[in-house]
Amino acid sequence: MLSRPPYPESLEARKEIEKHLNELLEMDVISKIGHNEIVEIITHVIITWNNGKSKLFGDFRALNNYTKADSYPIPRIPHALDKLAKAKYITKIDCMKGFHQNGFKLSSMKFLKIIWHMGIYEYTRMPFGIKNLPVHFQRMMVTISH
Image (tube, rainbow, N blue to C red; front, side, top):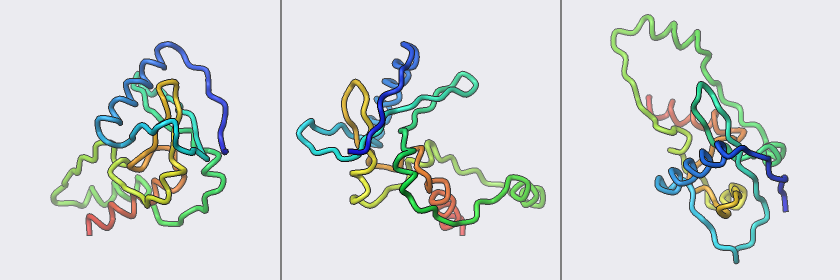
Protein backbone atom coordinates (compact mmCIF):
# COMPACT_ATOMS: atom_id res chain seq x y z
CA MET A 1 0.00 0.00 0.00
CA LEU A 2 1.35 3.41 -0.98
CA SER A 3 0.35 5.88 1.72
CA ARG A 4 1.59 8.81 3.79
CA PRO A 5 0.65 9.69 7.37
CA PRO A 6 -2.07 12.34 7.77
CA TYR A 7 -1.17 15.96 8.35
CA PRO A 8 -2.33 17.82 11.45
CA GLU A 9 -4.99 20.41 10.73
CA SER A 10 -6.76 23.13 12.65
CA LEU A 11 -10.47 23.08 13.44
CA GLU A 12 -10.97 25.74 10.75
CA ALA A 13 -9.15 23.57 8.20
CA ARG A 14 -11.21 20.51 9.17
CA LYS A 15 -14.44 22.46 8.56
CA GLU A 16 -13.17 23.66 5.17
CA ILE A 17 -12.09 20.14 4.16
CA GLU A 18 -15.52 18.81 5.09
CA LYS A 19 -17.17 21.60 3.07
CA HIS A 20 -14.99 20.84 0.02
CA LEU A 21 -15.60 17.09 0.26
CA ASN A 22 -19.37 17.63 0.45
CA GLU A 23 -19.22 19.94 -2.61
CA LEU A 24 -17.20 17.35 -4.55
CA LEU A 25 -19.71 14.64 -3.58
CA GLU A 26 -22.61 16.82 -4.78
CA MET A 27 -20.81 17.51 -8.08
CA ASP A 28 -20.06 13.77 -8.55
CA VAL A 29 -16.33 14.52 -8.66
CA ILE A 30 -15.74 12.00 -5.86
CA SER A 31 -17.69 9.07 -4.50
CA LYS A 32 -17.41 7.38 -1.12
CA ILE A 33 -16.19 3.81 -1.27
CA GLY A 34 -17.12 0.95 1.01
CA HIS A 35 -14.78 -0.38 3.66
CA ASN A 36 -14.82 -3.83 2.02
CA GLU A 37 -12.98 -2.64 -1.09
CA ILE A 38 -9.26 -3.27 -1.43
CA VAL A 39 -7.32 -0.01 -1.44
CA GLU A 40 -3.72 -0.25 -2.64
CA ILE A 41 -2.89 3.42 -2.99
CA ILE A 42 -4.34 6.11 -0.78
CA THR A 43 -3.46 9.71 -0.08
CA HIS A 44 -4.49 12.29 2.47
CA VAL A 45 -6.07 15.63 1.72
CA ILE A 46 -4.25 18.94 1.97
CA ILE A 47 -5.92 22.31 2.23
CA THR A 48 -4.18 25.47 1.07
CA TRP A 49 -5.17 29.07 1.61
CA ASN A 50 -4.81 31.99 -0.79
CA ASN A 51 -6.37 35.40 -0.11
CA GLY A 52 -8.72 33.91 2.46
CA LYS A 53 -10.02 31.21 0.08
CA SER A 54 -9.31 27.54 0.63
CA LYS A 55 -8.51 24.89 -1.96
CA LEU A 56 -8.50 21.13 -1.47
CA PHE A 57 -5.83 18.83 -2.91
CA GLY A 58 -4.98 15.19 -2.60
CA ASP A 59 -1.36 14.71 -1.60
CA PHE A 60 -0.41 12.87 -4.78
CA ARG A 61 3.34 13.50 -4.48
CA ALA A 62 4.15 9.79 -4.10
CA LEU A 63 2.07 8.97 -7.19
CA ASN A 64 3.59 11.89 -9.12
CA ASN A 65 7.08 10.50 -8.42
CA TYR A 66 6.13 7.42 -10.47
CA THR A 67 4.40 9.36 -13.24
CA LYS A 68 6.18 9.95 -16.54
CA ALA A 69 6.04 13.65 -17.45
CA ASP A 70 3.85 14.50 -20.44
CA SER A 71 5.26 17.10 -22.82
CA TYR A 72 2.92 19.66 -24.32
CA PRO A 73 3.47 23.40 -24.73
CA ILE A 74 1.67 25.52 -22.17
CA PRO A 75 1.44 29.14 -23.35
CA ARG A 76 3.27 31.79 -21.39
CA ILE A 77 1.13 34.61 -20.01
CA PRO A 78 3.00 37.38 -21.92
CA HIS A 79 2.42 35.54 -25.22
CA ALA A 80 -1.27 35.11 -24.45
CA LEU A 81 -1.59 38.80 -23.55
CA ASP A 82 0.13 39.81 -26.81
CA LYS A 83 -2.45 37.78 -28.75
CA LEU A 84 -5.30 39.32 -26.74
CA ALA A 85 -4.02 42.84 -27.41
CA LYS A 86 -4.46 42.25 -31.15
CA ALA A 87 -7.88 40.62 -30.84
CA LYS A 88 -10.98 42.26 -32.20
CA TYR A 89 -13.31 40.15 -30.04
CA ILE A 90 -12.63 38.26 -26.83
CA THR A 91 -14.67 35.31 -25.60
CA LYS A 92 -14.57 33.96 -22.09
CA ILE A 93 -15.19 30.32 -21.23
CA ASP A 94 -16.07 29.78 -17.59
CA CYS A 95 -14.66 26.40 -16.57
CA MET A 96 -15.81 26.10 -12.98
CA LYS A 97 -13.30 23.81 -11.31
CA GLY A 98 -11.81 23.28 -14.76
CA PHE A 99 -9.66 20.28 -13.97
CA HIS A 100 -12.73 18.43 -12.69
CA GLN A 101 -14.22 18.68 -16.20
CA ASN A 102 -11.76 15.99 -17.34
CA GLY A 103 -12.48 12.31 -17.07
CA PHE A 104 -9.90 9.54 -17.02
CA LYS A 105 -9.59 5.83 -17.77
CA LEU A 106 -11.31 3.60 -15.23
CA SER A 107 -8.02 1.74 -14.76
CA SER A 108 -6.60 4.96 -13.24
CA MET A 109 -9.30 5.18 -10.57
CA LYS A 110 -7.41 2.84 -8.22
CA PHE A 111 -4.63 5.46 -7.99
CA LEU A 112 -6.92 8.39 -7.21
CA LYS A 113 -8.24 7.70 -3.72
CA ILE A 114 -8.19 10.07 -0.76
CA ILE A 115 -8.82 9.42 2.91
CA TRP A 116 -10.09 11.64 5.66
CA HIS A 117 -11.80 11.00 8.97
CA MET A 118 -15.16 10.93 7.14
CA GLY A 119 -14.10 7.94 5.01
CA ILE A 120 -12.28 6.91 1.85
CA TYR A 121 -13.23 8.51 -1.46
CA GLU A 122 -12.29 7.88 -5.05
CA TYR A 123 -12.20 10.53 -7.73
CA THR A 124 -14.53 10.07 -10.68
CA ARG A 125 -13.13 13.17 -12.41
CA MET A 126 -9.56 14.51 -12.53
CA PRO A 127 -8.37 15.86 -9.16
CA PHE A 128 -6.09 18.78 -8.43
CA GLY A 129 -2.53 17.78 -7.57
CA ILE A 130 -1.81 15.34 -10.42
CA LYS A 131 1.50 15.95 -12.20
CA ASN A 132 0.32 15.95 -15.82
CA LEU A 133 -3.08 17.53 -15.30
CA PRO A 134 -2.17 21.10 -16.38
CA VAL A 135 -0.74 19.73 -19.64
CA HIS A 136 -3.78 17.50 -20.19
CA PHE A 137 -6.12 20.43 -19.51
CA GLN A 138 -4.21 22.68 -21.93
CA ARG A 139 -4.39 20.01 -24.63
CA MET A 140 -8.15 19.74 -24.07
CA MET A 141 -8.61 23.53 -24.27
CA VAL A 142 -6.63 23.74 -27.52
CA THR A 143 -8.75 20.94 -28.99
CA ILE A 144 -11.96 22.71 -27.98
CA SER A 145 -10.88 26.12 -29.27
CA HIS A 146 -9.68 24.97 -32.70
